[in-house]
Amino acid sequence: TGGEFRSQQAFPRRREPSRRAGRGRGDGFFAAGDRAGASSPHPAPSAPAAPAGEEGEGAALPGPARPCPAEPAGPRAASVSNGSDSESGKELVELKVIWNKNKYDVKFRLDSTGADLKQKIHSLTGLPPAMQKVMFKGLLPEEKTLREIKVTNGAKIMVVGSTINDVLAVNTPKEAAQQEVKAEENKKEPLCRQKQHRKVLDKGKPDDVMPSVKGVQERLPTVPLSGMYNKSGGKVRLTFKLEQDQLWIGTKERTEKLPMGSIKNVVSEPIEGHEDYHMMAFQLGPTEASYYWVYWVPTQYVDAIKDTVLGKWQYF
Image (tube, rainbow, N blue to C red; front, side, top):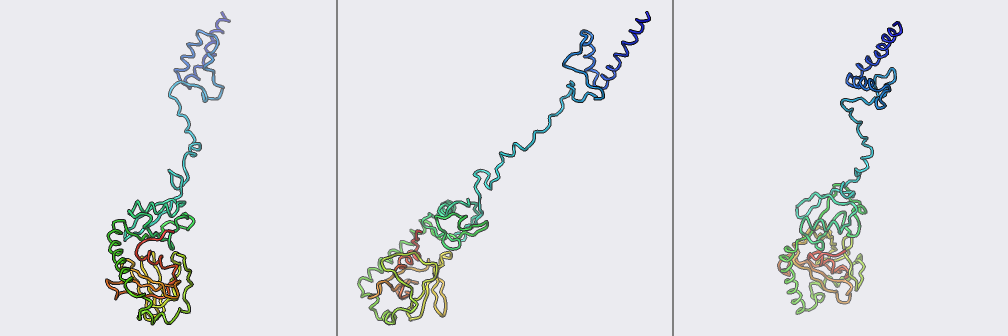
């Protein structure tokens, strides 16, 4: 009986640590463990006892699930584009397009060409690209990109031109007037033989007359046309301000700034004996009395002057 008494006294002492630990970890878990221990002398492998000193940390305990740690954001960052245009990855530049007192704020690709910009202006204004004069530090080259010509944010793009309907309404009377003038010229003697012109032409070429190239047509130079005479025999120069759609006629005394739309017609004739130079008149009013005459215009610029003033844009 002494041995049985010791066995009965020892059994509760062996179970007591498990009960105390079970109350610390969760009564439900160890209650189930006690029942399992009653039927099997070995502990269930799915619920090993925690090492001494660890209050169940790392054990697979029943009850509310612990939240999973947040997934690091690093791998997802690769899907974010770092370009200026989130859709195309193209770098954009902000422009201010000005036409007929209308202003348009435009974002455009920096690597697009001047021809691409003309198409964009067409969609904004209705101006066909062939009838646009686009200015940025001079005439905008169609074949170069905006990056190449150093367009920056906030750049102002000046556009000069008329829609097809405006051209048909304005140019038809001009063309008719030009044909009438040509018919009248054919009936008269050559202009260079008329007395009013002979007194200027007889002075000969100006000392600083610009060189001429016969049989060649060139676009307008970037500098004013100089070294010419007006009807009084004084020196005159022509400056074409394309960005303002104006022709500046400068003399020693003053400079007249004429809107190109106000010039009704342009006539010219080769100078007899010097066919590589022309005499030219700008019609500023309804009659021939309003002609402003200029003498010794180099022949290679004659067509470019007419096309620019009368609205038939040059192609570059």
